[in-house]
Length: 263
Image (cartoon, rainbow, N blue to C red; front, top):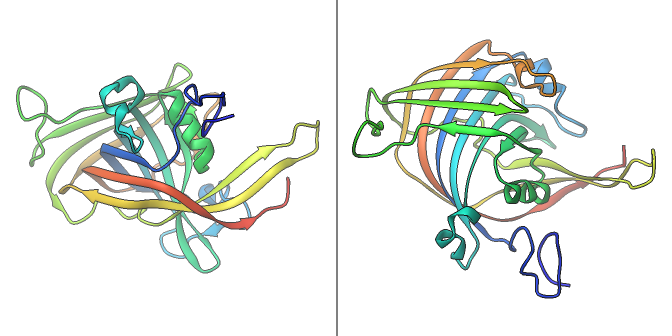
C-alpha cells in the first residue's frame, strides 16, 4: 500500500496529503495579548510547565495560506493548496527551554486537519476570514492607516473578531510564536477505557523561513462564548500588539522529546 496518509491504496493517489516537505506562502494577522497564566497552565499537560517569562502571553493568529508539496502541482489546482486557519499559541517550558505551543486551531479544509494530526496540532473545522491586501481598488495596502479585519467561527458560533490598523513598520510580528513548537501526538486506544495506544511529546518548526516586512498597529479583539469551545476562557486582560506580515515557510518533520505514559 502506498500513500503518506489515509486512505492508502496500491497507487497512493487517493492519500489525503502528500509526503513532507510541505511549503507554505501566507499572510498572517497576529494579535498578542495577556491573560490569566492559570488559564494557560490548564492547557499544558505534563511534562510541560508555564514559561518563566511573561507566562500569560497569548497570540491569536489568522493565516491565509497557499501550500504545496515538492512537486508544486497543487499550486495549479488551487482547491488542493489554498486554505485559511486561525490558531492560538502560548509559550511553555520543557527541560529548561522555552517552546511555543498551539493550544487551539481551526481550519477550513480536510487536508489541513490531516497535516495537523501528523504534526500534533489540535485542528478542528471552522470558518476563517481576513481582509486581503491589494495594490489596486478599495482593498488595503501595506502602509500606515491600512485597516484589516479578521473573524473566526465554528459550529455556527462566532468565536473571535479583530480589527487591525497599521501604524508603522516593525522588526518582528510578535514574540509568542517565535520558538520551536512543543506538541503532543496521541492516538487513543481502541479498547474501552484502555488509555492511549500512543502518546509522545514532539518538537517541530520551520526548516526554512522567509519573511516580508512586518507591520505593527493598533488592534481591537473580542472573544465570544460558545457551547463546544473554550477560547473565551483565555480572556483578554491586556493587548500587547497587533501585527501583519507575509511569510514563506517550509516544514520538514520534527523530533521526539519524550515518550509519554498512556492516560
